[in-house]
Image 1 (cartoon, helix red, strand yellow):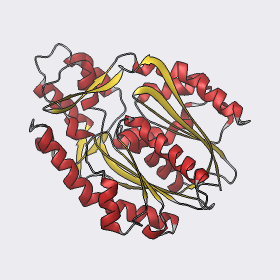
Image 2 (cartoon, rainbow, N blue to C red):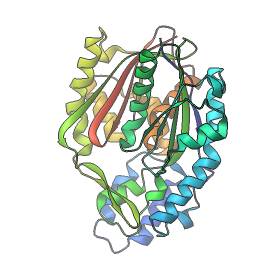
Image 3 (cartoon, helix red, strand yellow):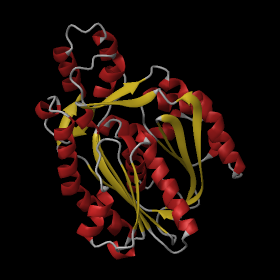
Image 4 (cartoon, helix red, strand yellow):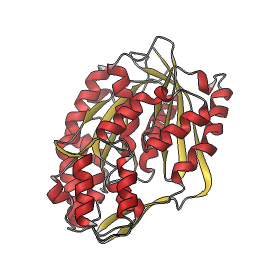
Length: 347
């Protein structure tokens, strides 16, 4: 049965704290009517610090999309291979043992995909299947796990490498003063994560069943406006309320597998923000501490988009939070609005 092994992570060296974020907002948007409301929202995200790929002095410039995408390409090619090497070692396999690479990112664009460069650079087989995913946003982490599961079921005996590269700070827009943009300026962080899904069981979560669900008529609620200056994040104020309709879907998904969603041992949930986590606990009927590792990720890294579920899982792995046979749910949420869900069990 496909097994998701311990992920590896890289967090950039530059750090911006909550206090620095608030000071920056007050400086750059001092005459903005949305400032006080935004300051209050940012202060209640729970995010204490975030890692960013450039010093804040560079991140807050407005150099245009071409420059920002060049930074994305340079830094991803510089840093991703080292994270992959760690992920491969966690699964005790080599590049030649990989049959497919699923690469996810919503913060930069390359064609050919970074997967082609990785195959040439790192010695993956020339017949490695490439599955780049660029438009599922934060849900792409869950989607990558699900597509790896599906690939191994369709191709028994194969192993899949997942790479998530998210430099959200490259989308900072110093002229966007709406509440959604100001909130995102204090919420999102940068990270690279990687994990291996093997066909054989091992020290990890065995993937058993997955599902996707899209909330109808919400496709405009999380989106990019793509301009010469890059990606402008657009966030509808109704997004935090989406856990109410998603919770019954997650409950039915677990029930169809013979599990009860409020009696699982572990929850690896996308940390989109504190209300997302609080509401989902409420509507699933689980204690707030059930999502403690997702909350830790939010506090120490911010919302790192598709990398969140891998970092939360890594934290759980290192804390020995799993017990043999323990049942777990992985869930990522993103633009659409879509949920990518997986049921798994610890080996």
